[in-house]
Amino acid sequence: MRVDIISIFPEYFAPLDVSLMGKARERGILDIRLHQLRDWAHDVHRTVDDTPYGGGPGMVMKPEIWGEAIDAVVGAAAAGGEAAPEGAVAPRMIVPTPSGRPFTQEVALEYAKEPWLLFTPARYEGIDSRVMAEYGFRLRVDEVSIGDYVLAGGEAAVLVMVEAVGRLLPGVLGNAASVADDSFAPGTMENLLEGPVYTKPPTWRGHDVPEILLSGHHGKIARWRRDEALRRTAEKRPELLARLDPDSLDKHDRQL
Ligand SMILES: N#Cc1c(N)n[nH]c1-c1ccc2c(Cl)cn(Cc3cccnc3)c2c1
Image (cartoon, rainbow, N blue to C red; front, side, top):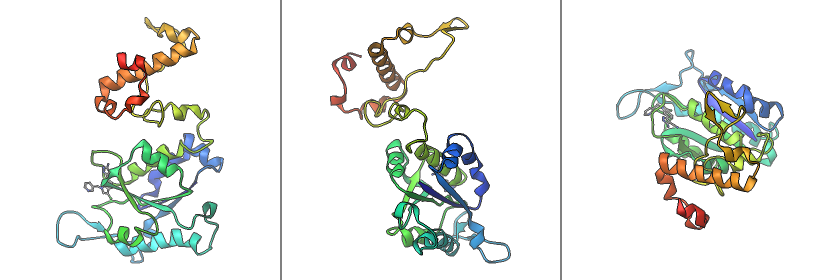
């Protein structure tokens, strides 16, 4: 997967050089390219913002700069300037915004199927809306929010989304099964929180590991883990239980 990120703070994405994402880049599973938006601002101060039409607080990011940057990043591949990833003619453009649709595990799985993503994290009060209109169809523009709280800009949201999507790509996680066991993962864990985890020693400061986990009885361990997931979900996120497909609950689940 190719990932392009256009930002006035490309240094914000240094964390993508380390850990899982760093290893995925070294192994060629993820091809992340960072672009400084100001490289397409041609005035002496490399200005990227201006006052909002209609008045109001803050500044708005200028459409011309974004248009030149996106055309340069996307056009280079589409114009044959370089091999587009896996024949993709154009990327999916993802715009973090407080007013976007919720970014969920389902959306992460949707993005993980794309050969090429273009993230456009902005600052100030956002990007002139004509930019999303200009690329809406050709780049399948998707405006998303990572949660109901307010950030200072889109960069942190892109870090979250790149990690959530990147870890789903084949070969990134050592044990593919752990993706299936994720909280919210489609299948048996859909809309359930993960249960508690333990490792050695079996007793630590008087706290014992639940006996069942030392039993070696895989069927009973799986049952215990599902019970813990249901209990924890009921306690911390009861609204998720309402989304559970009743057919996914067995007789034992229903007794809980
Ligand atoms: N994704 C997401 C997301 C989230 N979940 N919270 N905040 C954001 C987010 C994303 C992009 C920007 C841009 Cl550009 C500017 N701001 C600051 C701001 C604050 C209040 C109202 N308008 C803009 C952003 C906040």
